[in-house]
Length: 296
Image 1 (cartoon, rainbow, N blue to C red):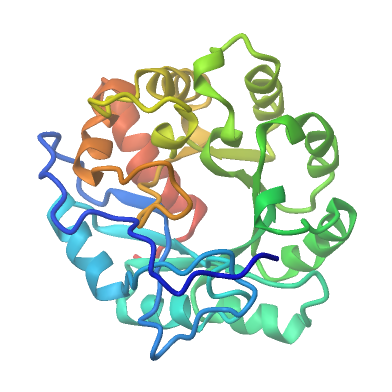
Image 2: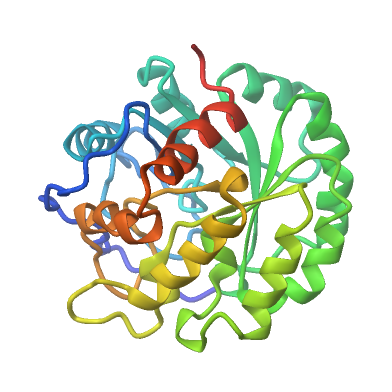
């Protein structure tokens, strides 16, 4: 791996716009990360970048600004398999914040039980080549049988071309599978592209959920006005076809990005993805409430 720069990479706006869209009560941001502070939660030596600190206090303030009441924090490879930064954020969130951990396929059952008790609801595996050598899928599927015993689901992040090979394997999972960021398809290629069509076919299987996050990532040529029209179109199609199995998140603080998105604009884009209030409440409130089992 090349030498890691010690200069922190800017990933988020200090003052995002205030969205015009008023979110429903109980709205959930189902995909964020927290970074540091590095003095308390050291970054992993094998990380691929050094982010600026994006601690839980900043995340909590962002959610108050956006009108978001619940959240799922996803452990980042920046912190590796040391899930403490997310675990402590869950504890500070007073029942409104839950988590998804990073683990090795050989993680002991005792650790899975501990993570579940601490408020983690799933584990994530990356199949992104640029994030390092991905774990083979077969051990992940074997692990899913142990995840089932602890009530944990499987979350996966992969490059869009991999869906054709990974899809059939993931369909053998013993637990529900959440696909990150619409399978990282290239929105500029349109809904007819084989990668997006493969995602639609995979979603016909009730085992799968998909995060309609990342409209700002899958628009390969992000427009200057940051409206992400191509990404919005694909997200809307997924919501229309699978409203009960879509989840949404900001992906704050936007690591490994081509630009720095405005979180207020990402919230306002929901008015185009889900123009009717029923779908908005289904995806932002009911789906995460029941899938992640937020406390009453």
